[in-house]
Length: 251
Image (cartoon, rainbow, N blue to C red; front, side, top):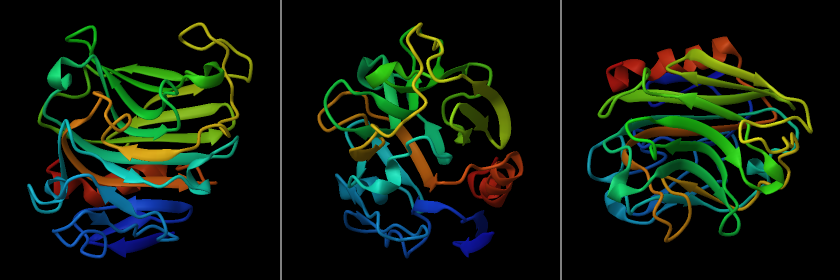
């Protein structure tokens, strides 16, 4: 199932959030409101600074102190159901302000609960990792070493798709990089106990940041952010979404 928005056919079945700055229905080029153009259209984003949307037409720009928030809602509480999250990202600094890690998509409830889906680490510079993690209940499902996949000032589409309760896939530019299957109660990469029920992941969604006032902000350019709930993206779905927009980002 696909829908045309902007100029691209994107998979829309299960789409609960889509913030795409090239579409005037989402962002008109001024102000601090980014309207959800996903399935329900109810998850409006709030830009902390209007410059996020005006630095360059058709993208969101983050200078390591700016971010977008989306209010807490049932659409972002996944439980044990399938889900998928995608972001087009272009890093201009892997450790802005000397920070050891950054987050481009984070669900924030209380300080210290790292419910991060798009979390990137550079503390062992020049190493860079893409991690999916949530500190509560020991969930820490996946790590990818990104050094051989991306560089600064390049556009890439990052996708995570949970096919089933204990099965996670991570893609870069439509290509499957890692698939991880870990049973509930299994051992995570951090030697903690893996919890496959992500029902406790709730709170404000931070796009381009870890939490208000926290120094783990993404610095760079961002295209669409898409969230799917109750539906995983297949390998073909991920490739479709990538091919639909790759020419826009010169990939």
